[in-house]
Amino acid sequence: MADRERPLSPDLQIYRPQLTSVLSITHRLTGVALSLGSPVLVCWLIAAAAGPSVYATLHGFLGSRLGLVLLFGWTYALFFHLCNGIRHLFWDAGHGFELRTIYASGWTVVAASAMLTLAAWIISFSVHG
Image 1 (cartoon, helix red, strand yellow):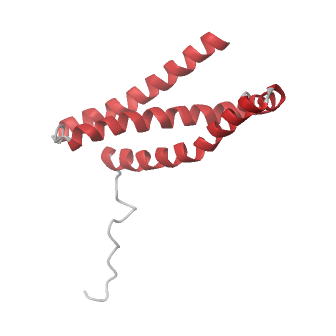
Image 2: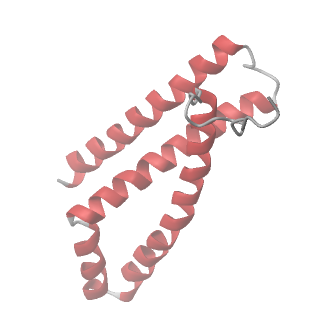
Image 3: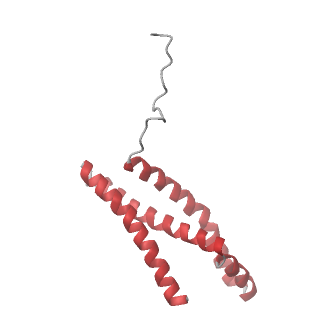
């Protein structure tokens, strides 16, 4: 019996990710995405100050398909990180640790992030076309 190899823990072949672990990893990844997207915001501000030709160049990239996909992802990351951060503030205050509440607040974060992202984009396109 000692010769038999035992699987390492956790065995990734049988491990089923839980909502809490997925949201925790996603919270970290959205923080990284926001950090990587922040220089784009700085470039946008510099381009706006540098003049119309520089701004038009950056606006051309951000208006492309790739630019729009990156902006959409960054918007979702912003809202997810915000909503999950609010959830963590409630946890820091000692609220919402019942298993049922943890799952309800987790799914609320996912839904609220999606709705806020879609609302921001719908409003943006309705205002600016």
